[in-house]
Image 1 (cartoon, one colour):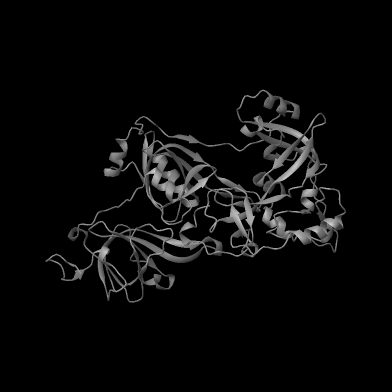
Image 2: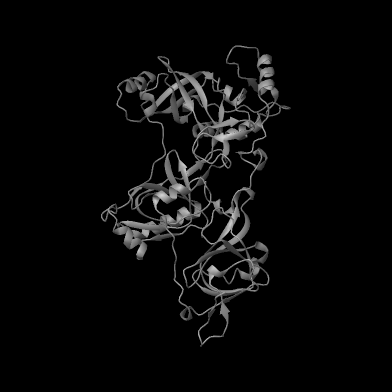
Length: 511
């Protein structure tokens, strides 16, 4: 085993290089630079602190990940400082789990009660200040859906979009900060870096200081996902941003033919949609489709809901990664997209088809998850649980009273004409937003004394073929056996999950 002596003018000791670390060592000693440390929390358990993770670098540019359990944190918390040099002695070594790793090292260091962590003079050791292991676009594509590595990237920022999310199902409504950076790789391919909460606020501050200049950024520890055919790089708790730094990586990037030296990032602040004074009729929407312009467009339309089309139920189970509908195969749920079927996670989402009439024409509008959540002030999983609807029932034959009450009501719909509508034989339009006209807004009546929520009289079986309600109920019992899913279907609480699977703690900032 090789070792290295310390300089002659400092206390004599031997220490290992990080590539010599193994489980067979007895009281090992290393000299490293603490590149970065962060809290690993489980957001599904009220942000429970699982560990403090550290990224360590030695003189030979070897990188290893270290972990501190919360019960040992009191010993090290005050000592931890980004960029400082340390001598660490007497620690545990374990195999590195092959999931959401930041280094390729086969092992991981665990600090314990017997571990000593002493600050060293930075002038006595030649350890780099930073270390990046950037991947190209093709390599990152190969990591999507595997959950093995959290890679680093270098790219040019072409657009910065503020995409804050408002959850109107809570009282008061909760706003979550979200920032999306459109990034162009040296190959010319585009990906989207999504940043949330406090990280998003910090990125906004950093970008404001850059003023009007091209931006080349190095982003570390991102979690690659495919979303509707686009590559999204979700920031994690370990993610850091390096803006317009000068090093070999950014120098080589600026030499690539796809780098644009005059490209100043645009900043998009989409204003929330609000109903305009002039609304379009259904006939005008259909006339626009008949023109075959091929351009997507938003229309506002005031109409009354006259019927519900519930032959396919009122919800579906969607993959949380690619948003495609999940299908059943025996006792399991399988993603219809390119996700790993063994780790795919499903979530109940609204899909409600309504027949509307504007007194001149009728059409079919479809309420998907976001507008339906705002209308009912409840997610699909919460509404299903409230009305005792089986969460893993893909049929949705039992229709809650809240959905039945749509019939006969007037709404102002924001309709999106999509590319699909120009070729479809059967026209149905997706609802982007739904508003209640002020003239017809009605206050809820107080519940009579002794009444209870979610009672059986509030639930009416969907009856697409005209059978008696009792017959439909009997059929639903026969043809809807409960499935013991190996995949998880996410609800709003832990009680809404089916066969829950432990989530990786490094992904608490992903959404």
